[in-house]
Length: 263
Image 1: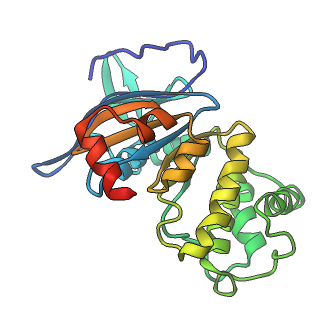
Image 2: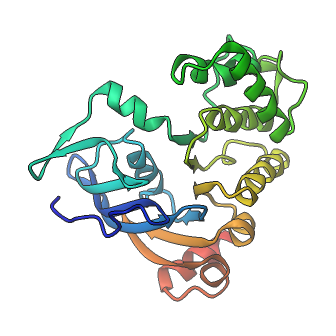
């Protein structure tokens, strides 16, 4: 836990992971992850179930406590304050402040069933960022246009398809104006015909320069949109590089085996 960040000035770097480890009891899920994501970069994490991808994503916004290592987002240590070389976990209030800058979209949509779409999107900016109702509602309407759900402000989650609910979840995350978006298999709970509409929104975000880290099994999306692909297996980074290179010409045998099964 003494390793110092390689980028201390935040120069173009959004995420830096340094020897990140995570164990659940005796089971080590992350075995020393080191990676850097630059501002505006889209990185897709590929790998079999149980390889540690989702756990790593959850460590980035401290939904999971690391067992070792450090994660910095935009130059700031996540989840901990450092004093005299020792790390102390942040208070709940400090953590909440940090998480404002990190949007996360899960496999399940986690919308508030008893609120309409407009309220689902605008609630956090009002409660946490202190926006006025008018500001928050105006921004929510802008975001509904972005995710192609204009006119659905008054709908409740049960009135929407899975793809529509996931697009509302993306709009809700964007409403906090995050610096970084994390996507944890955002299409895996959707019927195949609804996957495309969610990926289309993610393509827009990538084109607009949003820094994105995406856990996905959608190889065509990763090849088209990602700047880099990282293949993880058994808690380690096995291979990383430009998306087309890793997907079309993988170097490592474990990557080749995985991709053959995916095609």
